[in-house]
Image 1 (cartoon, rainbow, N blue to C red):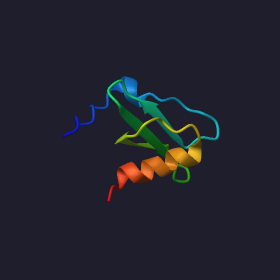
Image 2: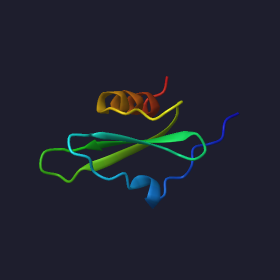
Image 3: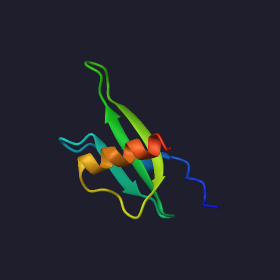
Length: 76
């Protein structure tokens, strides 16, 4: 049995904003990766959708990060 994902705290959630990026990933100290996807709907403020996943390393590019977010958010 694996450890449950950590609770998201303010320090984890503060991934910052990077120009041109809609997805961010941060490796947590116990092997979990926090994946944050930014969604913007027209004139509304951005919404940050957060999921945890267990992967070997956090992705470096936006496309790989979005694919990881999808896989973690909707596991089979």
